[in-house]
Image 1: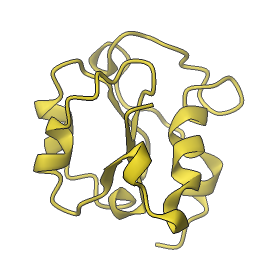
Image 2: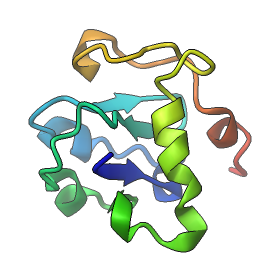
Image 3: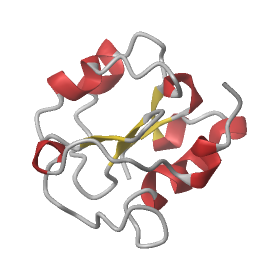
Length: 107
């Protein structure tokens, strides 16, 4: 995984990152966005445009946010959305689900 969206995006969802992503790897959940770990090309454009500063390179993620690596990965797995690797967020649209940890995060 190259980049990870952390808690600063929950209930913000500015979407500037989505429009600038050259490979369409940022997917929309109900309360936040998720970066697909296998589709991200590690370009970093999303980091430079994220108003709340919620996107981090996985190796620079603060210790207290390390669990967001798993949250971003698991969002695509069968136990959450089952999206797998659809090859682009625009082809699937917004999900009606969030990772369980995001769904119960305080508002």
